[in-house]
Structures are given as C-alpha cells and as structure tokens.
View 1 (tube, rainbow, N blue to C red):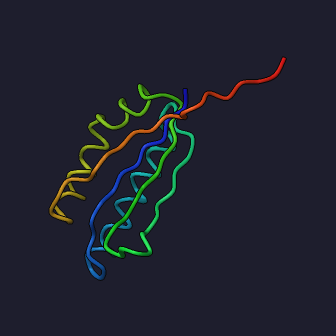
View 2: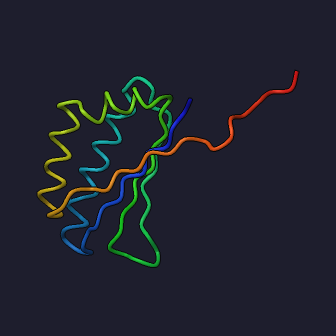
Length: 103
C-alpha cells in the first residue's frame, strides 16, 4: 500500500532558506533512485512563510524506512538540521479507504 510522507521544517527566510533549497533538492534527486519512490514535492506555507513541507509518496512504509535510515540520507539530513537548528517533524499517512476495482 502506498504511503505519503510529510516532512515539516521551520526555516527562516533569506540566507537560511537559500542554503536549505539545494540540500532538499539533493535529497529529492537521490530519492528518485530509491526502490519504492513514486513522487515528491516541496511546499512553502503561504500563511506561515517560515514553514516548509516536503511531501513524498512511496510504494510502502518499508521502502520509505530503508531510505529514511540510509547513511546517504542521514548525512544530508544532519546538514539540514545544523542549518535550521532543529529536527524536522515526520508524519506518515496511508489512504483511509483502500481503492477497490469493480469486477
């Protein structure tokens, strides 16, 4: 079953945001080569400009966990945490209702 991963980060506008974007783009580029990766997008909260949300879709929670705990990802995540000064908030979601096909 596909899952959605929501990663929320607080980031100050200006220099901090400019340094964060390449790190997130690097993570996304690496994620596209991971087994089970489906898609991803990065959003900025219009009502809270200091809030960034990365949403990615994975074929399974196991695929996500393999990527989340990989040394490659953890190294970049550590750079992000040092830059913004706090850990990201992770939330995982699955469809409430499974899609069924008639027949």
